[in-house]
Image 1: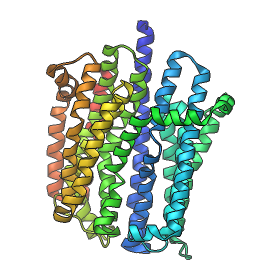
Image 2 (image 1 turned 180 degrees about the vertical axis):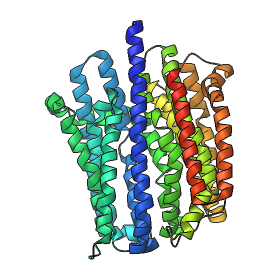
Image 3 (image 1 turned 30 degrees about the horizontal axis):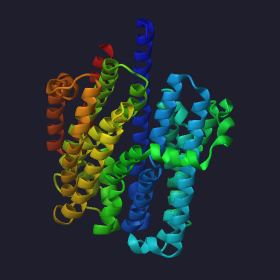
Image 4 (image 1 turned 90 degrees about the horizontal axis):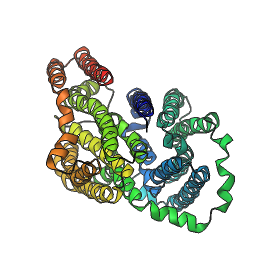
Amino acid sequence: MSGGADLHARHGHRRELFFNQLWQGLNFASKAGFLALLTPLMLRVWGAEGYGMFALASSLLVSMAILDGGVRSMTRLKLCEAIVAGDARAFGLHVGRGLASFGLVAALAFGAAVAVGVAGGWSRMLRLPPEGDFLIPATVGLVGLIMLTMLALEPLAARGRLSALKAANTVGASAAIPVVALLLVLPIHLGVSAAVFVYLVCLIVPNFVLLVRSGLLQERLWRDWGTIRWGDVAATFRAGGWFYMTTIAGVVKTHALTFVVSAVGGPAAAGAFYILLRITEIVGNLGATSGETALASLAREPLPEKRGEAFGHTFVYAAVFCLHGVLGIGFLTGPMLDWAAREGWLSGMSFQAGIGWPLAAYGLAGAFGRIVVNAAMGTGLIRTAGIGTLAEAAGVTTAGFLLLPHWGLAGLFAGGSLASLCLLPTAQGLCRNFGRDSLAGFLATWVAPLGRFVPLLAVNAAVLFLAARWHTLPALALGAVATAGCVAVELKRLYRQ
């Protein structure tokens, strides 16, 4: 690659990093707004048990990723390989095989969910009201449709336009706020199921719009789909096996834990866990979102040194958000929850003192896993990553069953965060793929780049400490603004370099 082309590629990667982070930030803000604005109203209209049902249905939106068989990540990787090879026919066939494979699984899951609901199984297993036997199957069907449309949009992600998918999801999540709010204030009480239905429809519609506006339909990628056979579907699942393991593990250690908490402590405890889990996503999801670009960018780069350079851009970009996010969660979560309880925003819920730092640790562990696994997918380490993240998920689940009854949600988050140590072998394997096969190479990849952030982290920590001690809403808001300001300063420094 010539120097000019190399510079253009790096500029394109950094531009995509910025827009991916921007839309993920707006997406997170829209979902946080949904949580902050509508949670008090939901609790008042439905009560703690009704809100717990909504939390379970919302968790299905993430938990159903367990059904994709690794198809989505594997499809993106295959599409990147087709782009490098310049094979347009293979590009279309990989899209078709992915859609056929996941469509079959989604239909089977919906049928199974309906069968369990008809038998009254959901209400018994999850200790839900009878409405749960309709709510869970309906959610499974709609979420399956959402995932199918997102898979149809994977060609955009493979071409370096992942931010377009994030933009569509943000539009849907933002539109859901006024729509669901209107449903809650109507004089006719339509229940939790109606709210979940309109929420999910709001997420589906922008995906269809993007399919049309992106030009994917005009590319006629389906022209060779008639050649797909059952053997192709089976081969797709076989090839996606280890990708699937990472998907399962990712779901188990996040939103599937809502069901573990519900089984151990009931739906009210599940509702409290759901709120805290969304807070950890400030770091584990929003902070590490740049890691999602690593799969495509690393898969398109054959040279180890260039892979290391591309990963370095991704890692330091994520570190800016993650490290300052950890400080924000650790210092501000406890005071903010206390304020929300005093003001009646979270009526009927109580949280442990000092919950902020276990949440921060769990969020950071999630961010580390997200970055490692996505980079491993793009560099041929998917088997190692699959084994490591499955072990991590087993550790998190064990923490849920063993620590939750004795130490509450704080114990679950603190114990679960230690399970991320299972991914250290994969992190070392990445260093070898970057041509850095030594302890010094490991430190140069994972530790040395963080040194530049220490001075501003110290300043931010001091401001947040004072804000938490002041314990008033203006002081807490000032602490949040200071954190955002520190992130902006660090990003400006990165772009200058």
